[in-house]
Length: 437
Image 1 (cartoon, rainbow, N blue to C red):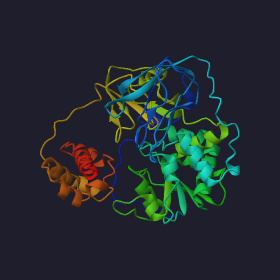
Image 2 (tube, rainbow, N blue to C red):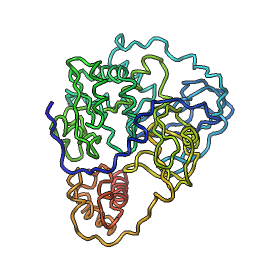
Image 3 (cartoon, rainbow, N blue to C red):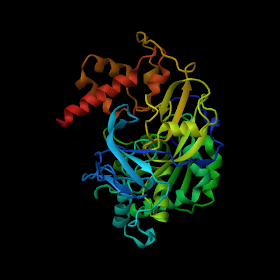
Image 4 (cartoon, helix red, strand yellow):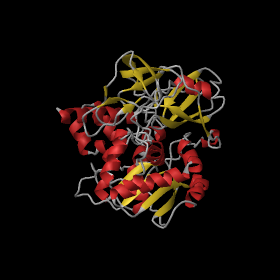
């Protein structure tokens, strides 16, 4: 099929060779699990259990009444030790439920035994996906049942699965495409059925052609594979749609405004596995990698596993760590506490040594225009950052600051090492906070 591409973008070193050939493996059951109440876009959950309660594997332990939310579940059976504040990957302390596993893996008795999706209506499937706590596993963790419920006036004609995985270092989606192609196709078909569409496309960068060949063995005429140029941020929803369908999501709009729903390949696997086992989303795949990791791995881990256990499973540090990032180096966030647990949106853990971690003092903008040339959203990052620093939020909004996808390309390319993205994030946060008042 014809590929249209998009303007801008950058080509950082891929570094995928560290872990791309390592199959997904499970790690031993940790001594403690910390299930945070904020794991998704939308309203945080409210605990449904208390200290000393016994919980079963798959039991719902937190939920909220809001439409844009997703419940949380016990990843294994055990005892609730406490409900307290714990470190979140976003750098804050948030409410979490600490569980001490008992090693029995007793499954919650109310877990449905027969979930053949072909026998369910679209509304029943959406309800099951909501109750299973399934969210987007590409990073943003947007509740999947919400994506599957577009307003009636929005006519969806295409479902795209995102297999681009453009973020450097990360390889968990690549491994899923190689190891679980049938589940990916099954999940895509469930999405297509619920949304009533007859066209499914899987977008894959051309550095993963072997994964595309594996998936082709399981597709029919209503599903296509789109091979995309390797360029960051190819995995952004808006740029995936532009590259594959030549449709532009309007400013302030969503993919459904152009008739498309986009989900990650990992999300498709989670949907398929829920209807196979009945279990909610209680584990996910995570790439643990970096030159400072002794044995980079792709791991399947329980939600709530402390990052220290992932590092241990990957052979530990080679040298003293200088920075540990949840996510990839372009869009990820550095954490400060080794007890920080895996959440639903944790796709990777990247570790840099002190030698690799460089801190630059920003200098004055040299007006080279590189950030403007490479911005995939066609924005002017240096001007937006300047407006935010001077408190000119109205002007920043008029220049489209809310359209920034926070890909970090401007930071990457800036020769003056200016923290453009950080200032833009501050501006977006302040503008949105004022709108909510």
